[in-house]
Length: 134
Image (cartoon, rainbow, N blue to C red; front, top):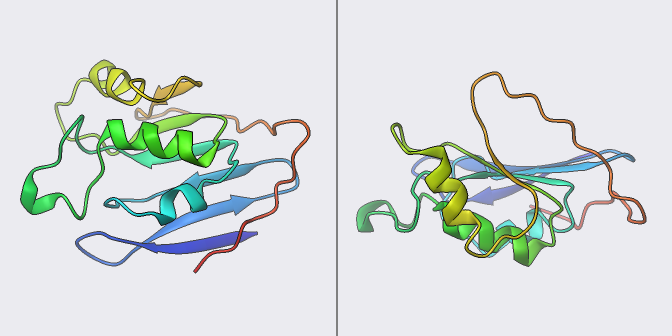
């Protein structure tokens, strides 16, 4: 099942929640801060989150982009099992992004890179049903 959420960005953007009986993947796409992100990612086995900047987005872009720090907070709020950061600004040190997200996120954490393949294992004892979306 696929559910979508309209999320803020410079152009229209839809966050996705892909659910199967085995696992749930939540993907923010390119987005700015939104209270819908924790709902999109609620109990997801993997949250794939935009993280253009580390700690602060320049003021003009603040409504349209996330930080690695905020991605970590959203993963905590959502109760996600794993967090994978993506869409880092070119030249951003992946380790610095990892550290920024880890300020609040204590679970499994990674940074996407070209060619990365990730298995999304199902967490035992929970349903993969979607919480509803837009």
